[in-house]
Length: 206
Image 1 (cartoon, one colour):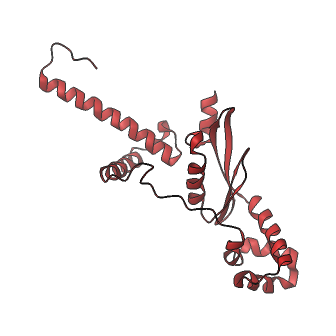
Image 2: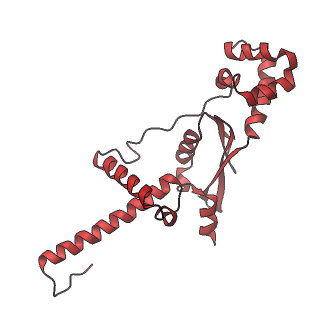
Image 3: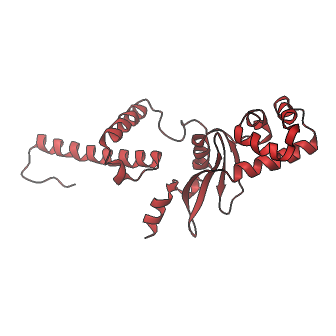
């Protein structure tokens, strides 16, 4: 920005300060929109939410805690077998296991909790629970940008049990919250740019 001739030093400093403030606000808006998976234009329609997030981010920046080098590592995926004790208490899982084990289900559930399953039982349970989670009702779809355009990244599962499914990549699982799954996906696919919601990807391609 060039300085007009007919302006005092004080007015010039105020003008530069205001321009800098506006630039910071724009950067903040973009950061918030990315972190919330909401387009900037929609976020600005909710000033109370935007202002609260701005204040939070300013504080974090002031404390020096914003940036990849200081952000905590995402929760790593867990094996399905390690989740057997919790899944043995999940109603959806129990219903599906009943269809396979019938009256023997209570004994199987006890063995899942105790970790004393036989190899055959483990293999059968793995198949039942994998089908349950991979065909779960929960689905959050995002997109990353690859060399051939956008590719889908989906967090899918049932309540409290999720996995990540991305076209052209192996499935990644398992997570006990959507938040953990999304955080891991953002790190795993960060070389493909920030994840965007499906509607945002469509807007970009139009």
